[in-house]
Amino acid sequence: MSLATDRDTSGFHLVGKLLEPASRIDPYPVYAEFRARGPVWVDEMSSLVVTGYRDCETLLRDPRLSAERWRFFDAGRSADPYPPDAPPSVRQPWFLSMDAPDHTRLRRLVSSAFTARTVARMESSVARLVDDLLDHAAESETFDVLSGLAYSLPMTVICRMLGVPQADERLFHGWSAQLTRLLDGFSDLGETDGATPEWVRGSVEMHRYVGELVTDRRKSPRRDDLISELLAAEDGGDVLSHDELISTIVLLLVAGHETTVNLIANGVLALLRHPGHLAALRDDPGTAPAVVEEILRYDPPVQLTARLAREDVRVGQAEAPAGSLIILLLAAAHRDPEANPDPDRFDPGRAQVRHLGFGFGSHFCLGAPLARLEGRLALSAFARRVREPGLVADPPPYREHINLRGVSELRIAHAGVT
Ligand code: HEM
Image (cartoon, rainbow, N blue to C red; front, side, top):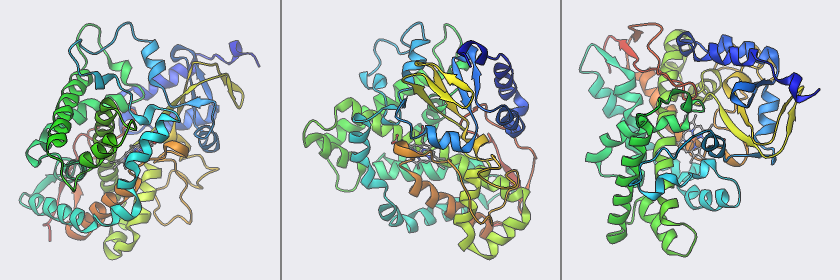
């Protein structure tokens, strides 16, 4: 089949449906339409949209695909979005968007901080944080699970790991929200001509702040924070440049925050809509890991990822020419009945859960052990401590992002927090 006949305009129609407000509340019917079509070439976006589970898994390990997707977006921009006085590190790609060997070198430097064993040592401090947040929430009759629990927990955890002063944590909440556009595969669709986009402003401010923090740690290193550890690695030779260091810290702050927020909030929402599973979790906190995996499958915080085709890549009947973008709709793949039977049902008791919620292959989420720990502790404490929780609004309001799926508020009424 020639490329010309593969170029079908109805793919763009489906993208349009995905961008509609109704799809923020429930994108899954549109994903099902995509899946029914097989891989869809969307000419207007020079992109191939892939929704089959096996296809997504295979493509995430395909060496013909590059993680340097910024090249695709940069090629579509008329000008450098950053102001001339922006710190040079803003133009330094983070290793999420790099290929080997640079990706391997940078990932190796931070990976020891995120192993399952290192993260397990954080369990009691994370559990204490969850309890403090729920104690605070108990002070009013209704509370917003998003701001009261889901939002604060991951930011505080990652800031403490890095050694960000507690008083400055709130700065990161704003920046992180602005920078999520960088992680959103459809971010450029929201840009307006002329005005400086929010994510550019947030990015510049955050890079300046992190740059100052690094300078400060260079003068007075500490023994127990990740920035000092990374500085020691930098000082050890030419393994890590100053800009790479800043960009890596920014990546950890952003990738580790907005995603985990949505794991917790999407999780609480799914449990409130399935009270039997909430009760089961309350009765047996040992089921929490299974609940977390099912949420990562059923309503994943990261709905899609993308790769750049280095050469022409055929997927089923469609073809992505070299230089085009391959969008992997992970959340659609999770509901591929070939991967998970009865996929539209939320069921933490499944015999096997297959998901790509943390990606797959060389870019598999570095923070997965930490995210799993935070998700498990937050959801089990919610189930155990909040009595008779109920949604104040169903559906709750959603944020505009396509990729990082999550609510903007999750207010619940309750009969007390024990
Ligand atoms: C990569 C999801 C939490 C750090 C990824 C990828 C996904 C993902 C899907 C792969 C993206 C791709 O292949 O294009 C999630 C989800 C999380 C979560 C759903 C929470 C529920 C975290 C946390 C951290 C983190 C807590 C660290 C503090 C990273 C980093 C990468 C990554 C550094 C890049 C890995 C690489 O390129 O080698 N994450 N993540 N993530 N994640 Fe996470």
